[in-house]
Image (cartoon, rainbow, N blue to C red; front, side, top):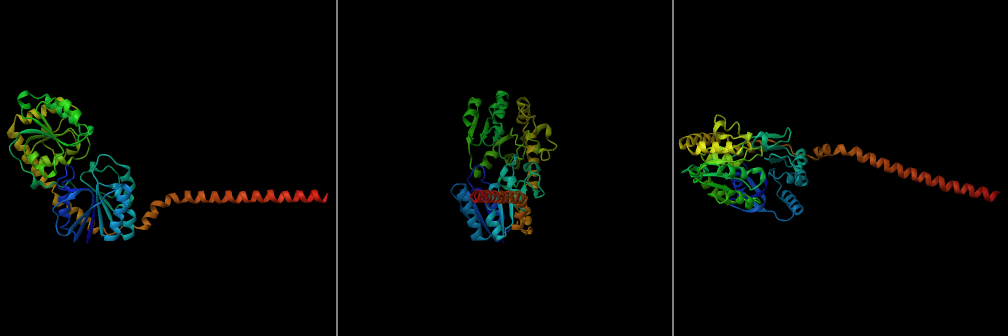
Length: 383
C-alpha cells in the first residue's frame, strides 16, 4: 500500500518540526511505499522505501503541484500533518483517484480551513481531547508520540523554558518569577529556547541577570538542552498539550505548568507541578521548592519519564494511526461532494427561475408594446 504524506517541513535539524522525520521512519514500517511532499526542509536519513519532494511556490502553485503529484503517483492513502488548508486544496486529485485522506491536527484554536476541510476528510487524529476543539464524529484522540529513547537525564543545572517567542507562551511571566527567586537559586540560571518576534522585548525584561536566550535550536540538539536542566517551566496557556512539556518529562525532569490539559499526566504531583495562571509568586514558590530538593526532583522526574514511555510512545502512535488508515477504505466520493454542495442548489435554481421569469415578462411586455402600437397606427390610418 502506498502512503502520501503532506507536511510543512521535513528536516531533522528544524527547530519546530524536526521530530516529524521520526514519524516518517515509523510510517515506513507499515506501508510498502511512502512519499513525503513538504514545503520546507532538506529531508534527512530515510529508509529505502521512502522518497520526498520539496514543493515550492505561492499557495496556488503549491496546491497545483500537490494535485499533480497525487494524480501521477496515485497513492492508496493520503496523510496530512497540520495543514488543513491542503486537505481542502488536495480535494480534486484525491477525489479523482478515489483516495481516502486523513489529517493530524493539534491546536487550541479552530481555523476556518479546518472547518471547511472536515466534510472531505475520512478521519482527524489528535493528541488529546483539548487539542482538537472541533465537534466531529471523525475525531480520533490518540496521544503525542514521543521518542523517549532520545532523551535521558544528566546532571541538573538550569531552569528551562522552551517555546516560540509569542504572547500566548508567556515567557515574560516565567522571567519575572525567576527574578523573584533567592539570589543563590538564581545562580542556577534560566535558559529560554525558541525564536520569534518578542525576543528583544524579553531581553529587556531579563535585565541580563543570568538568563540565556538560545534562539531556535535544531531538533537533534534539544535532547541535550533538556538533559542538562533541573526543572522545566512553562506558562503557556494554549489549552492543549505542549510537546515540549512531554519531551522534558521524557528526559526525567519535573515540570511546572498552568495548563489544565496536563491534569491527568501530572496527577499526584499537583502541589509541585501546577501553579495558578498569571500568578508569578505561586510560580516562584513552586520553582524554589523543587530547586531546593534534588531528591524530590529526581523522584518526580523518574515517575514522569515512565508515564511518557507508557502512554506517549511514538511507535505506538504511528501503529494506531496506520491501522486505522489502512482499514478505513472508503474515499470521500463525488456523491459525498454533492451532499455537501446540494444545500446551495435550491438557491441557485431559484435564482435561475427568477431570471427566466424576468426575461419572459420583459419579452411579453415588449410584445404588447409593439402590438399595441401597430393597432393604434391602423386605426388612425383607417379613420
